[in-house]
Length: 185
Image 1 (tube, rainbow, N blue to C red):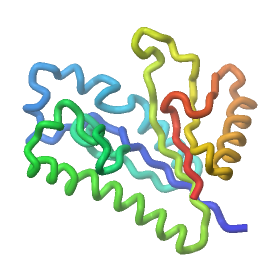
Image 2 (cartoon, rainbow, N blue to C red; image 1 turned 30 degrees about the vertical axis):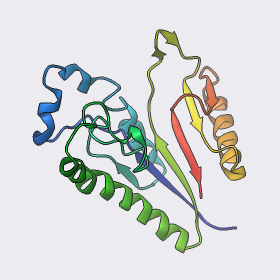
Image 3 (cartoon, helix red, strand yellow; image 1 turned 90 degrees about the vertical axis):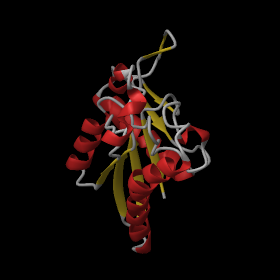
Image 4 (spheres, rainbow, N blue to C red; image 1 turned 180 degrees about the vertical axis):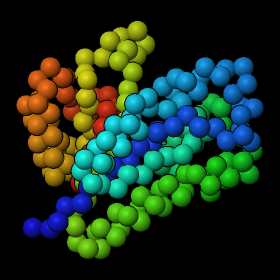
């Protein structure tokens, strides 16, 4: 049986806006304190998980309102309404200075683990608002995984049963909404 290595990431860790892009948020500074700018509490949870499990942690260093580290490069949601209209040169700077280094670091770590013939469990930590569009969400923890990948489903089942055993008061659901993402490679 191969060794298993755990990786923790937090793609929406901060609401940081570098000085050259602060003008995009003039007139709406409150947006930077909202869940739209970052996943509140997620980085603290990610750090805790990484610490207690002695796992590496990769944290995004920029608000998702400039570039969303959790989106693929060609996804329309890579850019928010604040950054979508930026000139191509500005977008390239965001990609080169923030997005690509983060993605390269994560992919590089995974590649090294796979080269050692290890299984990788990737936990991507997110948070979500308990009320969305005026509707209370009936979930405290969401475990996201690809149902087509048997190992991911198995891991999610085990994780859910262990959380429920420790905290039966928490409503743990699969694939709704964004709470934590698990990927087994």
